[in-house]
View 1 (tube, helix red, strand yellow):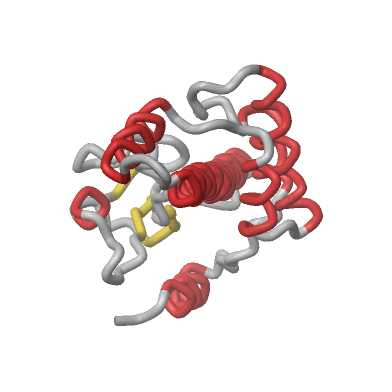
View 2: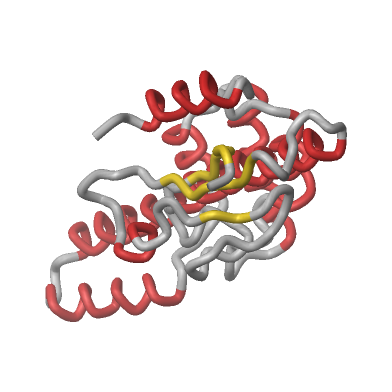
Length: 202
């Protein structure tokens, strides 16, 4: 199985579009400034703005996902479902397990922070790509009569059934919905690693 990098290189050669994995694009930054954090649940406006600034630092300053996770973790609390899991864990441990409960709570919080960092960063990359493609169509650089959008998965043991069923799904340029229930495009769910690429029309 070819890597995503080699697939994108092939696409770049065949279409002449110079496909790149560089996520630092002005369209992504514009999306972050306007929308990052909007889909995160159970946070207030101040926390949302804090997350937005952290994701922006990731794109503009090279802040890594672990670094973003650490900063986001300081801003948020547990999701209600995580609170329920923590309570169940505490009850199962019985008295005198304070340190184990504390470690589990910390792990849950870190997982939530990492999910936010990964999802917001990948959403920004995809939204930036869509905006760049729409701009290329508008300027006459990208011909919707010759090219269309295609759903690309990360084909490994972490690929979920939902995304597996969307691999290779197609959509019109610049902004048509994907077939097979793909909607406007990836990511499809939290931590989704899918992206969309430009391919010659079938």
